[in-house]
Image 1 (tube, rainbow, N blue to C red):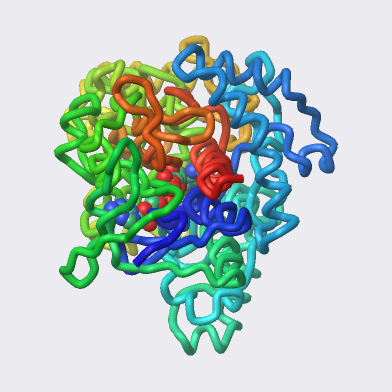
Image 2 (spheres, rainbow, N blue to C red):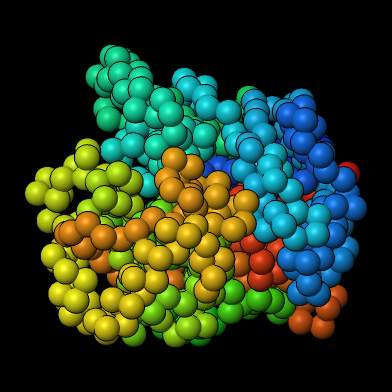
Length: 551
Ligand code: FAD
């Protein structure tokens, strides 16, 4: 077997790389470890953070390269070389334009604010693009091999929704009940789809993104081999000239004429690597990443002398693990809703609950609060979904599956709840009293919850004086353990501005590229806005594909 460019992995970044390399004239082969393509990308929100994208301007937003640079400077600091950041800011909008002009990929700008919109260069919306929904028919028989969405980005574990629809339902926006009914009717009235199975054929979020890219590769007849993990890189005379893959228990060598692009995700599901590199405690049970992301290609590249960076870092996010599920639920947005607090063993808050998820994860480690406990009352439970819980108005406690019910601490008083959770009762009582005062005044003098425009995006605008704070006063009271989970690791192979992997001595390893979570992130330790993982994965995929093909 041979090719010009070998693309390893099938996340959105890898598929973009394959398109770019093919369109630049290379003969491309894609290999994927699992029996489904799409990786975490297909199970995700599919949002991409692209400063200066053309849809932002169509929506009347404002942006400039200077603003984007200023914001990245605040966010990333000096953790990443400026030429990589410049390459990202320059190429990201071009990548989107190229895909829309030449492939089936389509996007819309979201009013989603940057995660720190008040910082220099931060924006209150439209840098995040959402893939437009599509129908499974664009994939034909290949729909069967598309990795299904994470349960948490669906309704009832099966009905696909857009980010916009998800936000409306979460925050109880006007018309959201009607919207939910419409989506369910649409799902059930897809008779051919229901006869085939339970999978929704309306594809949204990450599913739509990967489907649109995969369909574009089908148009180009680029071959993709499933169940074909890369196990080794072939390195000779200072360059990578091939790779070994495993198929049906047999090792096969692929000769590569131009370049190998590693887009095989992070090491979030490799417990040994987590323990070696990430802060402790650390568990693969807390990640929502794809179970096949075990850092194989990262290790293969390290074996030939590649340099790594940011290995102690992940895309942190508070998470809840439901027994029996292979991946955790991430509390992306629920923490912003009014009527909950997150506390440590002393029953004290230690951060703004509505923080962007990366910061919440850091906060748990900094406060040494693992697990933490999210506490809410009957009013909150009735109204809002929370991780694996539907609102009690839709699914009351007695209808919850036992594996979910068992995760909940429940009591008629705050003190009893504290005792059940093993939390200091006086501390928790004091925290709840303070929270209830803050709900009355609308201000949180401790952690400024609800002050940022970002906090408010997922708050409930119909609630009291602050969309993110409400009294916790109606029994029964609930608590649930929350862990510093992640949506993937963000340390990996150190690359240059063209995504080429660097060796320990800083020189380029010719013929080897890394993108997405296999590479160390261009965002450093930060998370500037929604789509900061897939946006760069696709942008550096675009760059790597062109470079490897020699254009
Ligand atoms: P992946 O998309 O995981 O792709 C890696 C692929 O490589 C997998 O298919 C894997 O099986 C394969 N692979 C692994 N090892 C090998 C091997 N040895 N050989 C061959 N193939 C291999 N990020 C955003 O930017 N925007 C969002 O809206 C967003 N929403 C999210 C929502 C959820 C619920 C979750 C869980 C995550 C979300 N993320 C989001 C995070 C994002 O999905 C990931 O960080 C990103 O998809 C990682 O992309 P990747 O290309 O590095 O890896």
